[in-house]
Image 1: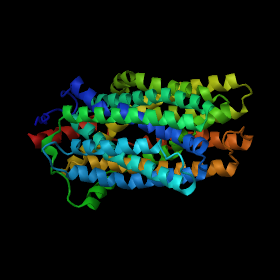
Image 2: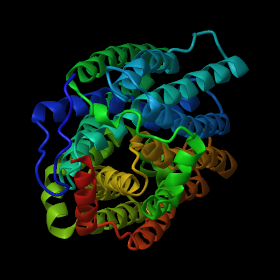
Image 3: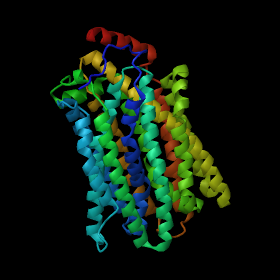
Image 4: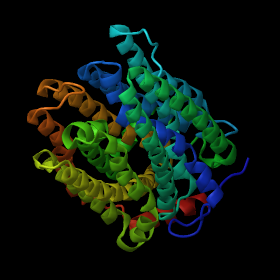
Length: 464
């Protein structure tokens, strides 16, 4: 088993090969597709096709994400503690793939005669199962990215490509949205049949791509066994790390603000803009800049610093979505459509920056933990951030369902101005407030390139 070189500088050297970068990003194509399908379409599939009440689906999503948040620390800590000839991370990534494929098909294939409480339970088991299985993949996968290179800027390249692969998978999902929205004209059965076919194709893809990554990637065997045997102490180290603690707070605020965006995009396209068939184009205008801008953010992060660039992405995200609060007050469909497309492009640029820079900065924080404790617990750290992300998301998704119900939402009917304002408040105004607060707090972050280089020099000297 190959072992990655450990005698490297924190600021230079150790460029990861393109074959490794490609293998690391490959699972993201399938998982990005699946995640977007659940984030953007399942709520609408459930309310408009399966006729499940929005509040019930809100509860399912809330419970699933809260449970998912609880399972993240478990998956992260166990992957940190794992010892095997395949390494700490890949064995978990491989174990996740069959449950991911099976539960994804289950989401889109409820039995035709199932209704009422039984159908709600089926969807609850499928959605909770899917998010639990993806936790087993995503937390070790993020942790593995932090281990592939200790270089301050090379990490941005790794996570930037990872973000691009995940977003490319999401772009592929847009064509599926088009097919499913088109099938809605033919009735619920046509939507069910098409959704099942697409779910099977996605499940085959995830099996192949995760298998390829498992075979191609290698891990640092010297990291095995370097974690505290007491899980609560390990997570206590995360909270005691001042840099990690600030990121946890910022992550929570950001994701409380943004959680409803994914769930409401199709609703906004149909019920606010009045152009449901343009929804894939709107999302595409977000996804394409998010993917293609990754090469732009890499040199900019070297010039302006990762910290400033991530702050910029937070503010740009807030302004882009905040401006969408004005949509219900615009008179023509054409103007509303053009307006949201322009806003989506700027939001996509910000997402490309955040997806590239954020996990790179998080990896630097893990190096600070090794500097203080002598341990390597990437899984615990990324699990902590994921815990906060999913907990905030679960709470807001639950709130979104209740807000739709109590504002008077009626599926497949024109909505009142009260319902439209409720939608764009959650979709635009609330994210703006949260992202501005998050950027202000993050301005206090102090682990910059110079400080990281000092820490890496100490760690490299210890290793030598």
